[in-house]
Amino acid sequence: MRTSIFKHITNTKEFKYQLLNWSNQFREVTFLDSNNYHQNYSSYDLIVALDAFTSIKTDYVNAFEDLQQYQSHTKDWLFGYLSYDLKNDIEDLKSQNFDGLEFPDVYFFQPKKLFLLKGNELEIQYLNMCDDEVEVDFNEIANYKLLIRNYELAEIQQRISKQNYISKVSKVLEHIHKGDIYEANFCMEFFANDTQINPIETYIKLNDISEPPFAVYFKNDKQYLLSASPERYLRKENTKVISQPIKGTAKRNLDSIEDEKLKEELGVNEKERSENIMIVDLVRNDLSHTATKGSVKVEELCGLYTFKQVHQMISTIVSEVDFTTSPIEILRTTFPMGSMTGAPKISAMKIIEELEETKRGLYSGAVGYFTPNGDFDFNVVIRSILYNERNQYLSFSVGSAITSLSNPEMEYEECLLKAKAMFEVLK
Image (cartoon, rainbow, N blue to C red; front, side, top):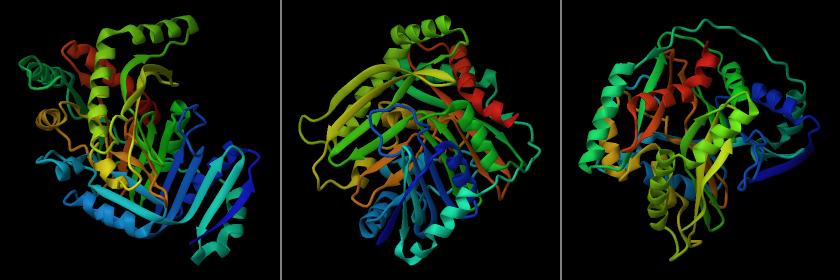
């Protein structure tokens, strides 16, 4: 059971920074910030979960079954992630590429301490075992001062050279032209060995230059995710399921007239629209596995949205599920998200596994939460920095959708555009 206490927050931006910095004393932290980005589906502006009372950590083998047992038994708020390599639990697939990060495939925890901010109203939910700490903690947060630490960062290296990238994309195109697949999301890693960063400072810088709707600061002891994700993977509200894949990217321009022109050009670009529509079809099929008959609908097709770094094309697909349908089954039958795989999904995953040189791990997986009543909301882990403090390995990856209309050189430039924010932060 939890005790709820409500507080009025006058300066929410300052409070967010204070809460983030105060939170870092705990071994487990999930900090989910919408950055007040306008969106149709949202419950809170900020959710912060701290200090595990119980947790689950496992590899991909029987991962969804284990998670099902944990979620159904706990019936409380749970926060954590699903790594991309859970595909190996769902299908007859393997991941044998290099993994410098060494994160578990699945990690979720039941927090002792929970903060839910909507507008200026803050709800603090503590498990009864520690509810006598609420007022002390709140006063500490309100008076918390940021401690600045500066670290030298090793040079960022590129796992796949430009020449090799173009060669690999050409091989993807061969598969497309042979009819093996229609589309594949091909990714490459940037990394640094023997490096130290201040995760909080790095996250704040990344978030400030992006301000996306699904930003995450995630800490599991010495493992960190610093995410400026603009993309929702999947949300469940009562019996409604919402998926919002992003496919289609255009750069921004400081000149407002040129910027609007770039956005309009994205909206009519045949290649970008075809990318998006193919994934919409895949998502419709994925949702149909758990949907009630005739309930899968496209609410918005190829909508145009502007973020600080890029313009994006986003579609919204929804379905209805029976109230008895397990939330884990909804995730299992749609994972990994089509925007990060391609179509058909299994064939695309096999091909990109052969051509990519790094195990994706948490990149292109999902971070989010379950509510006590079985609702959930998960992002797509993109535009993100991953860091293992124990082995001092830092990684971020970017990718793009390859279709029959793709030009390898232009796909490479799109990857660099998506990596721009991470490079700016890590200079």
